[in-house]
Image 1: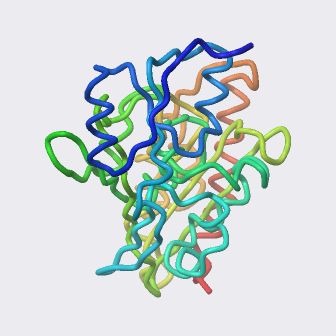
Image 2 (image 1 turned 45 degrees about the vertical axis):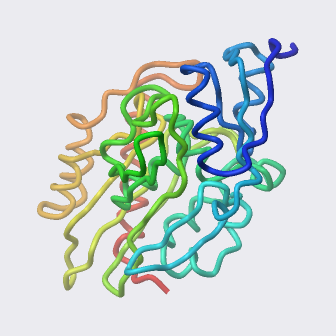
Length: 282
């Protein structure tokens, strides 16, 4: 299929992009990597009046470590994040997730900001953002604001972004010697969206873990914190954490897998990821 007719505008600056979005009262879309947007346009799942291309806005494609955090600009390509020494050292959870995102051609064009803004519930980066307790930087007509990851994803493909907002960066806490992370997913083929996935972070305290954050993807409308399993993993052990998933997760049947299969896979994943959480970062 071909998309419905739309207008195109190349934003000269962030303010210009916000102005263009504001003129169209929710009928404009931001074009960054376009790896999901163009497909939805071609299938006519979306039919905006205007595409606002932000690819030429300076300053949105940087990766920087500042004040104990790593800031990843919205236009950083997946491939650039995958190759980044800063990300590998300071936010290794992102580095572990990157090879699972699509295929090289997708990662060469897709952007970190685009993945977060789309908020696909089966995507890796939204869950990583939640697991790391990161935040999203947003610019809009009312100025700039930061939204914590736990509050950013509000529903199926729905976020705290307003129709006139532009996601400019994500900010993630830099790893310390006590940081622990884990990542695993099940997909039918490498590069496919996950049937079920798990991104996790924790802090080592001797032989124990504290501040455990388990963010599942592919099991709900948004990344799902397994809060009871988090507490069980820190206090009662792995078997208790697996058992707690029954109260944390309520996946639905879909064309990929039944709810029962997803619950089974979620239990397997927590065992695999828990083993990673016990390993020091190198």
